[in-house]
Image 1: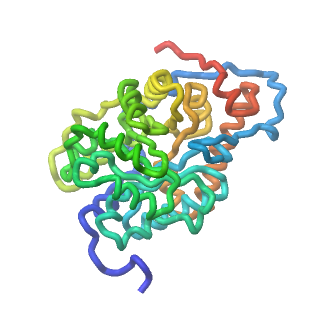
Image 2: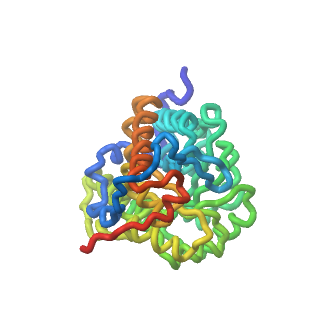
Image 3: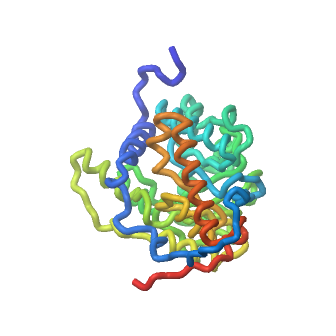
Length: 350
């Protein structure tokens, strides 16, 4: 029998991950009601840029590793057979295009070792910057540095993402809601883990104060994951509706927009590397995010549908995004990301 295709029923955690993936395919159903805030900004067009688009260089480094473009394939899934297909198609694309990649939360694989294979992609992507992923709150529910090491070792990762999902845990029926004392435990992981730690929100954004606390804890990068993209609150509301439960929309508009989070975090921690995510949908979004202070940007939900088809579909989609970054750079007259980061953005009045 093929690996991972037996008739064994899914565990509660696996079933939740499967529901999450299925719900996230419906963009409109799980999108935050308001945008990222990036549409408030625009570049001043340069009609005579004196630049050859063929000479534009998108290469950069992130956490010491070279990337061919400032893009991270965001953490999304794992823990069941369809998720394995998604992760492997994403990894093939990351390897071919020279991008970074994060896997979904590996808690399910630490609980059920038989599904670890759904996260493993090194055989397809030996050269990429690869991140493992665990929920930071699990450090209050029995997880230690040892589990963090296991997550990294499991997929031969170059770094570990500790994701912060306070709102999602608060409304999720299975949620873990004790976030007390986490700063000290994150600091312990950062101090003892052999690879760099990146902190990441999941759609509600990170403030200046939290960025400073994360820096003091020892994280080497922050993914702001602002409001404007997939709303995990909306995902949990949809899950509740599917179970026939009453739906509460009180926190639909909760969070810090992606634009605000980038600006706040960059100002608060000028020496940390920053990922812009939360509703990043095209190359122009990425160019704006870099001009606002991000080092790279991350895309997640828009890649799910292509990844369910093939690696080639993912490559085609991301190649279009990469070309759009170059178009934006051509139209402002810069040839590398350092120069792009210095291009002033104009802000529309509300």
